[in-house]
Image 1 (cartoon, rainbow, N blue to C red):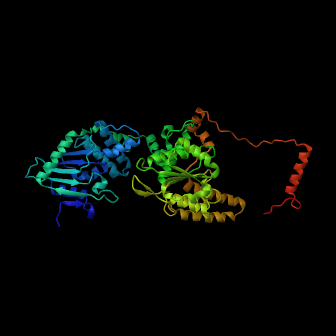
Image 2 (cartoon, rainbow, N blue to C red):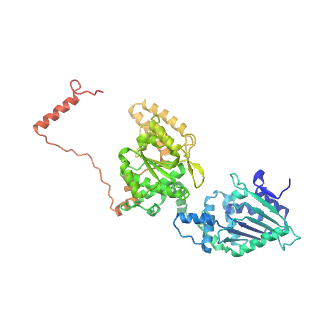
Image 3 (cartoon, rainbow, N blue to C red):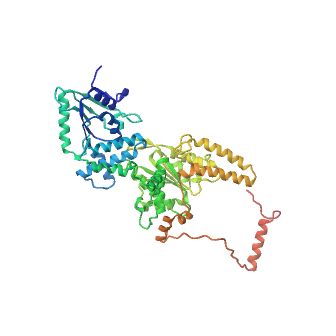
Length: 534
């Protein structure tokens, strides 16, 4: 059956149709594209086929619904004037370059695109209405008339990798039609011309910023390259900007080290689905966890998706957590005591689980651990994407490694898969089986050798496992790192110093002195003193 319709099935993609049109019509000199979404990666996949054309015009329509929803969520005013349309389009292109595969082909393609625009081979405009969702591709020879051959493709495909079927992953399902009747091509051209006249020019000078503000800049300095490395490796953890965190309640100081902990922890949580918050006692782990929870609430599909947070705490800490949650105005939060996990009947309701004193769940043979793992590993449906997603987990513990390597392994399984992880150690199960065997062998050695072997094991676990998924700062860190130390000094925060133990002598009266001696004798005399009985 012969039909002008085509989909992306059976390798019948839009890019294949482009190749066929240009190869069978060598007289084509003009190419016009009206698209809803533009991606530079899609353009430079098309670029080899349009190398010899005289003029290329691309008109981009921007999705007003999605843009308005994003602005509303951030409490911003939506301005539909022409400069705003251009800024919206340029931001999308810049983001596309930042997310593209970093290789020579991609870089050459984007640079070619910039050159095409700068030399006016390509003219681009953005439509200020943001309501153009049509996709039209028009192919015309010079002095087009009813005696010359032209084409028009229309349908669902955007000028993107997914729409054209040029990406490494599976292509979108697209439905398009190829027309070659003179009246069809003329009608499409007239509609394009009318919309083009309403478009806003994107000047070559505006496109030059792509080269200046992305990795395509060939004038980058060694220092800027070093900063780029830090950002890629540590994420937002390299930032020392206190304003990056959410607003703090009245009475709370904005501390740089806590802000960095929020940024670093949030990045780790999104990358690995969980992390250890292991700052030492007194540095504000509860505050950091609350800030991350609030940040996650507003970034995880809000306002379409309103997620819930479950906080698991020791009974003695429940009141303290409730007070902090109230001050931070955290909504959709449930608190449950660590001994009452069986009362959590619907774990699929929670996007985020925060576990205080997480080291108490290190024993996988205890019923509490099974209940916690059920809660943490039950997936949740995100209403904004309509997909099942893994929970995010924050494990708060100043001492994540307690008795043996198995402690860490059990805690990791709360947000990682034993045989397929997001860490450099691909198979956690195999890694920890080896460490446990080494641990058992070390315990049979003499004390000095055992200590050395244990230190080697813990060092390996720290480097391979803990460091990539742990946020930890000590008071010594805050004193030695200059930005933190200066920030604490400026805000008048001083941590108490601990000195060497000092002897304190108590003078007892004769009766108390006699009672003291008798008590020690009763406790220390193995023959006639007290014994331990159950």
